[in-house]
Length: 176
Image (cartoon, rainbow, N blue to C red; front, side):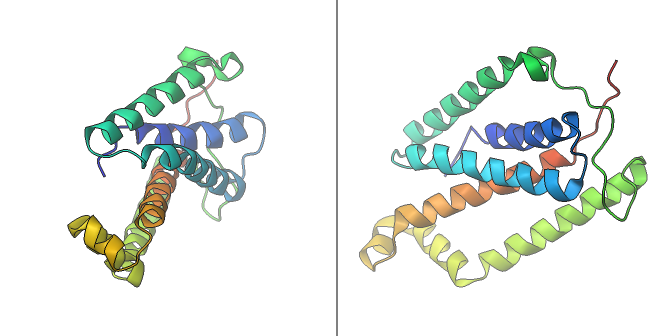
């Protein structure tokens, strides 16, 4: 599945975690899972519609949804609109102080490592084998009884959620 709309999920995660910080909720334990959940919910809504198409139509509808999300965010004047959202600080609440660049780098690296390991484990599970079968021959996978649409939707939601996590690890700028 080639999706040109993945930026919508990255942006959703970034804005949700940034809005939490802007509203005074600076705990990474709250903001980061909320960002991942919001990205997953956006992927569920977009995927439920987009996965009913195939080929170039799928590519174009995901791009259209990404553009819609872009214009939606640009219209939110309370959170910066087209100027973006400036934050006073990074998320906090972890045992490591995320204020320094080196510590923040290692936290982001650890999140990347955990994510890659989790996706590796998922790819080698029964779920991953079914996804590989669907990729190789979708009609055959459906013929032997796998609910192809549900598996593809689960992959789309997982990809959206994974896209929302790195957005939480963004660099805050000083607000003026």
